[in-house]
Image (cartoon, rainbow, N blue to C red; front, side):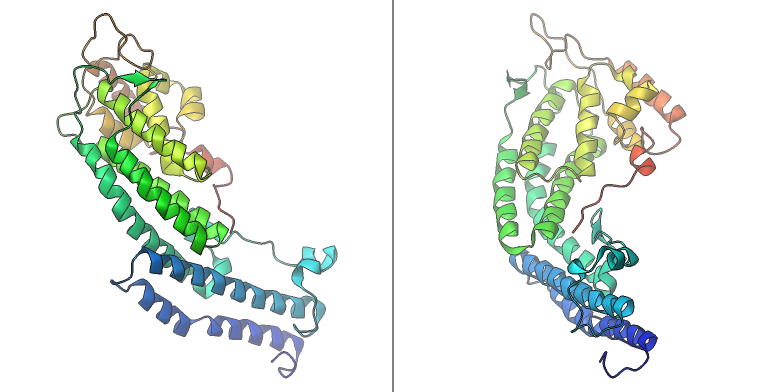
Length: 341
């Protein structure tokens, strides 16, 4: 095609258009049909995502050939690989975009972007449905126990349903590494961990109907710590915003010093990922924790804050917070977390 298309500018435009048509409507329709197939499970969803990512590489490589034609004025088959071009030529090329930013495909994937996003969404939905079936049991714990849980090395014993969830996640993550390329695998794993964290946050903010005390939250903290340990083992927490929010929310309660969040520096340094509206809804569920004679109340705290203290903190946060994020989303002032694929 490059040899028969005529003028150089026309070659570049025609080849770009040909590339987009080649990976356009027909391929997308076939992929969408596969993605939406109700009979497909996680194994098929993993393979579809791997296939879409492989197609992206073909799309990108054709783009490199077109770029070489534009810069060097030679046929793509005569041009050397893009990675071996001289620094002068490489600087004239557009900078590489990450393929996925916060779980969403970028324009570098061209016509495949929307397909990739939907394929990853489908895979996450299938995997989350099972993992969240375990985490849903969190709603069944005793939310107002009269004594702290037995503590060992600073944490309560992990709940059985968390152990079950971790077994499922281990199998899921191992399978993903066998099917997916490393970068989409990392993106998928991060989103699954965030789904787990959001499930816990929703359990705290949407219920329990009768409220919770700090003895219950000590149990939740132990379970979340186990999930975090799993995520650290798989090295997938760096881009997990919901996991960070959950950890900072728990740290706020476990600090025993709720007024500390009213300090601007503390909000920015310790609680920048906390969602103010969600925290307020959780604070509404806070109940007084029974005093325990002759023993600490847990987590090195002699006595947990009273409900009226939490209500006062919630009121001041509502009056102060101009945005949903307590730290006013410091990440918005910097480059957003990106998973470069």
